[in-house]
Image (cartoon, rainbow, N blue to C red; front, side):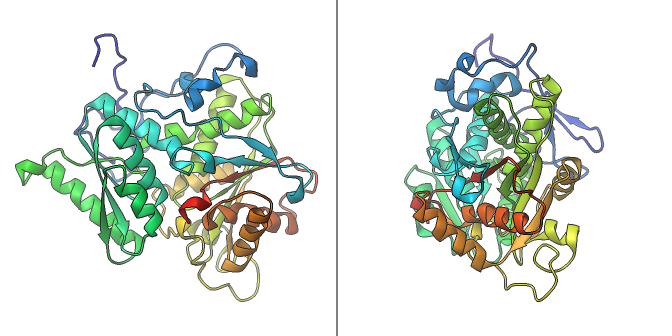
Length: 388
């Protein structure tokens, strides 16, 4: 590391107050069991710039004044298009997050996470993922020259396994549930930290899209881009798929940082789209059933495989973000998601099935009066159909 390079920020627990020094052996969670955060959360000084003053050639790193990580590992990601979508409502816009280098919004977190890993001198990262996050981490690890092992479900899509393997990462297939995959990865991290086998000591830095705070420093940039592309006018609502909440929480953190910096003066309502049968947030808010609707709940939604998370790591933070923004979360069965997917494809948006949950949720929110006819809404389209 160059002598004048910034010192990587330490980690801190917002719940118990413990702090941890930055380094390749830093913990992946607090001793109290809670997720850690980057101790430094910088804010720019001065007024918001005109759009023309932003160097969009730097991608999301044009907003590095908000990001406490040096841009060491980048593929020019960010500034995804914001496209009017009048067929989905008079004031609807799609944020095309599926046009990233690896084909999903997870590149936002991968660039910051692997940049931090490079800052710390990490030689190998591990991650658990149903597909997109693993592909993104693998791709950016290759860019950084860092080894990567990606723990995936045994039934992961062949296209996503190929995306991991072809950049030189090692997919490790795990039988069982999505939680079993996470458990296997965490066990590997624990063995690495314990150093029982000297050959494995420190060889498993956890680049988790759910736990690692560097990932959320990246996903927060979606809010900066949306606001900048709208000349710092914040939409009434943002709708996003909701599993572990990486984009959902990133948007909340980003819009909050914009208000703290004085670049905007309001927060959008954050509206989540969950898959029926995997909807702990909607269930917490509304009880059993599809987002609180009466009647027989739909069968488990096996179409939106990217958000099949029953125990999100940051559940409390997601609920806090919903409460703080007067937001909501609903659960959707497979039928409305498949219908939305077909409609998106016929409209020219070639996205993967999980991605269609957010537009399907927008329709449901309109039906329930959560989103008014004239509301200004941005919907995140999160993953490419090329990986379906």
